[in-house]
Each structure stands twice: as structure tokens, then as C-alpha cells.
Image (cartoon, rainbow, N blue to C red; front, side, top):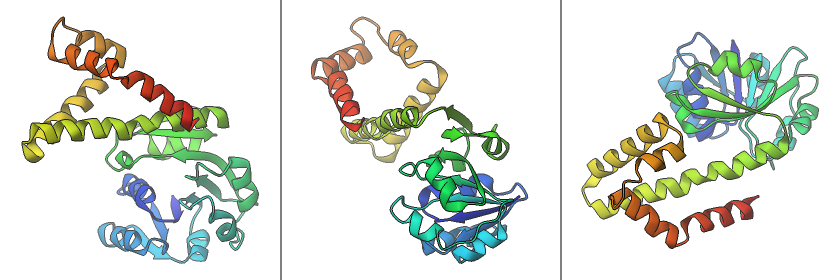
Length: 236
């Protein structure tokens, strides 16, 4: 496919890398020039162009713009009726995107994560996901949502990633064994959670008097679960 990217930040760059090596022609915009230059130097199928050139060269266009900037940028571009536009912009409803890129279609909003570049990553999606399925599965997994409200709830819940990473970082600092300690903890958490549902893992680690049980109970008494729920409610 002929794929274009308007906005080439960290997430868009990860998506480009996920699509590399599959025979696509990819044009990225000059916005975030250092990312665009890095992609063009790394991947032979990537070219850099102006926003107009990205639109002209592409059949599928990904929007990696800020919600505040998108209306001004998109209103200056000429889209075609045979184009599909996929938005990464969580703060801009899909109907608004469709109005801005008409006569092109805007079938879906997708919210990828940096892990998409290597595969095995979740992708939140709203709308018609057929094109996303064709481009990103089975290497990655799409979680298709049905309403804007559901998307907002998932956006709140996914914020658990940062405090989870902070816990691993803090435990690694306490361990005081440099990169090896963090690598051990990252691998432990990632593989354990990937292997089974969270509640099953908690049960399996609930050995009476064991290290995992004792630390979990200590953190629960300190208010961990309540603080998490309060924080999610604040986000919502």
C-alpha cells in the first residue's frame, strides 16, 4: 500500500517501524524532523515530504497530530475520495476527523503504543477496524471498542502502565544491581502477566507468609488499591 503519515512523533515512528519490510511505500511528513530523518535513514521504503506531498502520495493516511493543531493543518490539505484516513488523535472525535478530511473517508481511530514496532502490542481502536486488521494483525492485537465513552474509559485504565513502570523502577533502585536488576524485574512482570489473568496470578502468588503475599498486603494496607481507584475516577 501507499501509506502516509502527517506528524511523525514517537508513536507514529513506532507505527512506521511496525509496517516496515512489508512492501509498502511510506511517506512521512517533515513535522518532527529528527524522527522523520531517522526513519528515512533507517528504512529504505520511507521518504520525507511536505504535508501536501504526503497526501498526494498516499492511499491511506495516518494522523499523528495534536488535537489543537489538526483542524488548521487538515483544512489546508486536499484529500481525495479514494483515500482512507486513520487518526491517532484521542482528543478529536472520529466524526470531526471525517469532516476535516472529506471527501476522504475516516473509518477508524487507533491508539497504538511504542511496542507496536516489535509486535505483540495492544491497539485500541474505534470504528471500522477492517483496514487496521489487514495492516497490523496478527503481529499485534486490536481491541475494538464501540463507543467514545468506552474509549475514554480504556484511556483512563491504560494509565496504570506508568505507575506499574514506576513500581518496577523503584524496586530496581532498591535492588541496586544496575541494569541487570531492572532487566530481571521487567522480564518477570511481563512474562508473568502475559501467561495468565491478573487475578489468577495473584492467587498463585498468595502463598501464606510468602514474599509476594506480604508485600501485596503491606501495599494494600497503605492504600494502594484505593489510591488507584481514586486516581482512575479523577481521570474519568
